[in-house]
Amino acid sequence: MTVILGTHDSVRAHRFSIWSNVKIATSGVVFVFCLVLGIVSATIAADDSYIAGYATAVLEHEFNVPGAVLQVYEGVVIVTADSLGKVDRQKVLTALENIPGVVRAEVREDAGPSAVPAVPPQTAR
Image 1 (cartoon, helix red, strand yellow):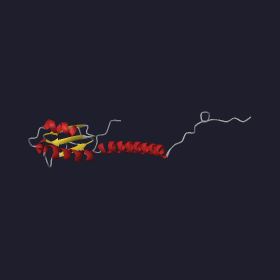
Image 2 (cartoon, one colour; image 1 turned 180 degrees about the vertical axis):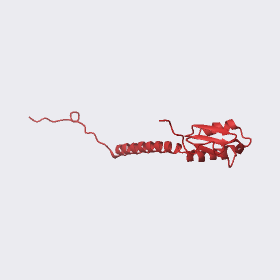
Image 3 (cartoon, helix red, strand yellow; image 1 turned 90 degrees about the vertical axis):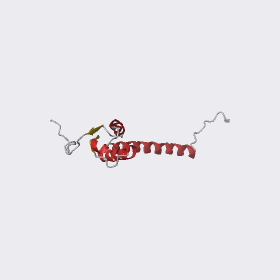
Image 4 (cartoon, one colour; image 1 turned 45 degrees about the vertical axis):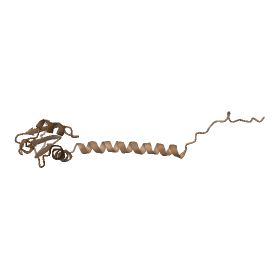
C-alpha cells in the first residue's frame, strides 16, 4: 500500500537563515561587551587616583578653581578651604559627592599631612 502525503501532512523542518544566526551572534557580542564595560567602569571608579583626577577636573571646569589642593583616600575627598577661594562650598561638596566612587567629600580649613593617613588603620583582631 502506497500512501501519498500532501503538503499539509509533512512535517516542516526548521530552517535557520543566516540573518537569524547573525542576530544571535550580535546579541551575544553586545551582551559580553556590556558586561565587560560594567566591570571595568566599576573598577576604575573605585581607584583613588581616578577620583582625584575627576575631582580636579570638576573644580577647574565647573567652579573655575585651578590648582585646588585636594587629597583622596579610600573614596574620601578632602579639599583645602583656602584653595577654593570664594566658591560656594556646599555646591562644591555636592559636585564632588556625585563623582563615581566617592564615599564622602569634605572641605577642611587645614588639610595638612595629618588630614589623611598615609597608611590605612589596622583593624583590631
